[in-house]
Image (tube, rainbow over all chains, first blue to last red):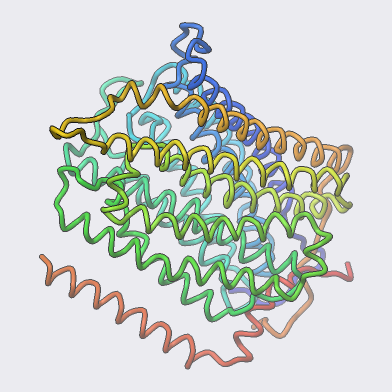
Length: 478
Length: 47
């Protein structure tokens, strides 16, 4: 910890502006691919017989672009923005921060092309082959150095709760990425996992679920705990509850992964443990949601007029929905219906669209004008985007709930002699109406994101990132 | 194995109970209030 302030010292925000812009580009790109593969499920000939346009290659491109391109760029940018401010010092090693920014985009760009070429580890959300895994590890370590280096140099004693969530994300993602990516390379484009059989499955879903937990939940909670009080212009409702929720979240999430492997060949006790921990997770998740909503409850006037705040409050509602649905789907008797159906896709998107994308949109509407020292180009367009995002998310979830519950129940139907009443083909033949609704929902959501891109571009056009200084000596300082 | 899981669960619960007690007893209302206000006072508005 350092003391005193340096004359002319200012926050290093240019890298934040760059990361936000890259994040928006990845959002539009990743969502466009998502809409295209949704169309392929209705009109399969849209692959035109080209391998790189097939669902199998575009689907990992979609998930990698939205999670690691849109999501991680936003998390990196907002972490860099908030950690300096909550530490009252400029970013540590700004050149390393620039390296993180550009190396991440370059790695994802090449990684995306490799997915189109058919390079694939076959591990969900970890499809990129070993050269990219090494690059990701190096960049992530640099990210950690910048982040924790800034905290180490902080001028105020408390480490604000958003930094606990961002820090937890950085540490856990490093751990699970390295372990899950352990592999023996055979060629530049092919490697084989160090684990085999049931162990491989357990390690993969320890990774997969904690990527959802510590990146898509923990990281974005860090975003929420910093930007919600900023937008609502009031402190978090219960700071104590936020700390308790952080540790409860951290201790219970790490065990929940095997609920992805119910009724498989992994040990039964591992499945039961995952159910128990998934149910426990409901407590910290809802504590956080309640904390967020109570924070906004005193700012109802601003909620009516500020589109950024509306996005964040709506994202908290979807966060509550997704974190209730998740533990329910982890219960084995519910999972027997939902697993291998589109219900899971609906659940994932209630979190991905409703929680991750909406809180990021809200944060960007707040952040971008501040970064360049102006006001948002069009509040009206932002409000239109809000309703398009809400409609798109709701339609998507409803379509996938309908499809998933139908699939689950029909697949479990037996005739009078105990044989399956419906074949896989029969059931899939009844899906096009649901898939058409999902396509429309995705398209509406994508068009909303395009509106935001235009709005943010017009806000930022011809402007430079402004200089902001840390505050003068405060009562927090040591 | 059941006892092992039970013991592990109880240790996690013990940690959480200790944490809650620590957070509520060790930190004064003033410290908590100051920490909660960090995002609201993190820029030099006079610059």
